[in-house]
Amino acid sequence: IVDIKGDGSVQKGMPHKSYHGKTGRVFNVTAHAVGVRVNKTIKNRIVSKTLNVRVEHVSKSKCRQDFLNRVKENAAKRAAAKGKKIDLKRKPQAPRPGHFV
Image (cartoon, rainbow, N blue to C red; front, top):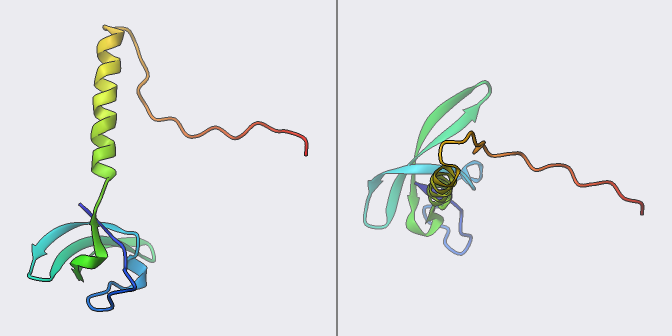
């Protein structure tokens, strides 16, 4: 899993601006570039697109590591609870409390 991030210092093999910040899977590797499969929203549907992007514009994604860390933490919480009912779901961030300016 890789993140696409266009690097302006290298113009060759640069992805289109619509793919900047997107995450995809590598399906092909060549000498200077990688093939990346990305999902793109077009009107009301999601289409799988394939891009050939130079290595300078691609970085390894950290989202998978965050997921694995969360799984490990949940397993530890589950072991500490020892059969008791425990809620391990992610919660949305609560709104900030009000104050006078």
